[in-house]
Amino acid sequence: MSKPVLYVFGGSVWSAALSICSAELFSEGGVEYQTINLMKGENFAPSFIRKNPNATLPTLEAEGQVYTSTAEVTSYLVKKASTKVKPANPEFIDILHADKLDPNFALFLFRDDEEHKAKSELGNGFLGGRQAALEEYSVHPEAEPHKSFYDGKIASNGEFLALYQGKAPKDEFFSQSYAHFNNIATFFKENLVSYLPLSGFIGGEIPDEDDYHLGAWLTRIAASLGAKNKDDAISAFEKGFKGPVPAPIVSYWRAWTERASWIKVYPELH
Image 1 (tube, helix red, strand yellow):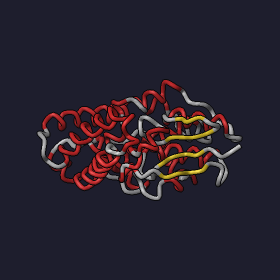
Image 2 (image 1 turned 30 degrees about the vertical axis):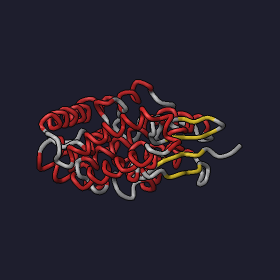
Image 3 (image 1 turned 180 degrees about the vertical axis):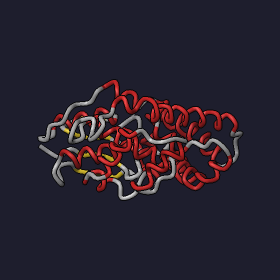
Image 4 (image 1 turned 90 degrees about the vertical axis):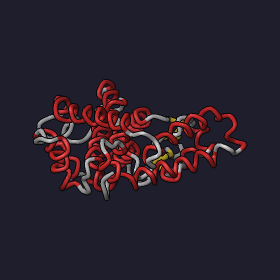
């Protein structure tokens, strides 16, 4: 049987969840990795859209099937691994992947002009690369069956890019950013602890399927608050969310950041 092929990108939050999962459950070389550069919009190539019509990462090809959501990919690898861990709680996975807690928007939101300026290089670089790729790929003959996809993405990404370029009014986006930030802050400070043990992982002494998702989500939130490494994440949480970090979250963060899989996937936070 051929090895599963996992399509990932180093700066992708949900690719990181699968990279952690793979490092935890498979020996070196047990999963083949293919990098799709999101900064260059390679996920919008017609050849990739044929694999995953959503053009998202992670994507997995295995046993003649293609799995296109983070939950599907993680579930497949957990089921196939010789190392057995507790399967996911679907309710918890749905919560983490809900739009209101989207860790990607957390990275790119800005609530005022100062935050806009601080994130300008990141936003213009990422969104500009996507826009150029969308416009380039959309005129390929192979792109014709996906015309509605390209038209929609060119419009939506273009609107987001215009905000970063200062070419569109920002007041409504400020409000959306405040609302999203507050959703994440509320979940972090009030709800997350109900899923966590006092020490270790949701799965016990070793991470389980839920932990792969949460470990990546929490790391992205730390990065979105300005943390550069594992040691300044707690202070970034305290400053960003304006209060002490609940003890179970501190313990959970330390459990992950001492683990070889996390260290391998996160030479820097993203």
